[in-house]
Image 1 (cartoon, rainbow, N blue to C red):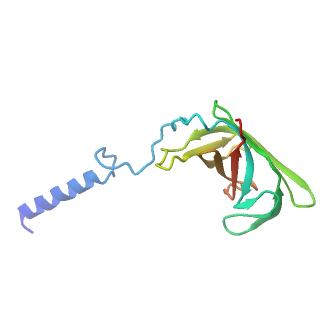
Image 2: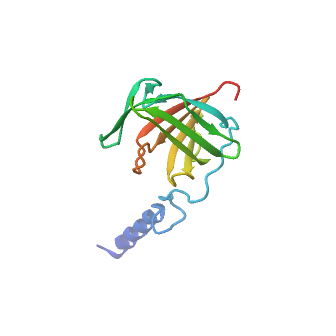
Image 3: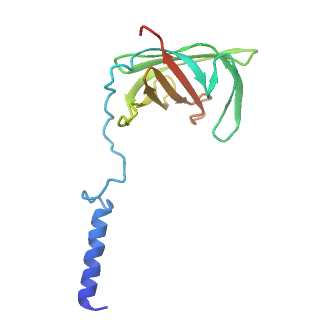
Length: 171
């Protein structure tokens, strides 16, 4: 290879490396997500009392199979109308009541929620919930008068159950 071709090749390689975002170069895209705190929700309409209306696509009163992402069954449960309360101070109270048709059970959880990213064109507000009760996090989204969350029902660290809540009229 001739000296001019080598210099040109080296210059091209450096230019490509500079645009790759690697090695801390600020001219390229950042491969890491931002580490700053998420922006708090701005819709103003997220606070209120929500009532449970759907579990993993099934309606209240139906027996619902709850299983981990790997398919291992957690149990078969019938859920009762329970609540998710979200207040303007970005705290939540979650109450889930259910039965396996023999023994009643329940989960009470509380903590904080924050906006998890930008609001897409459809207006769905992504949220991250941080549990003060269990010390874990779970995801959610607010769209219109509904809140959907993905929750770790059995406490094994895997988000395994989807719950959908509807805003109680007047809240």
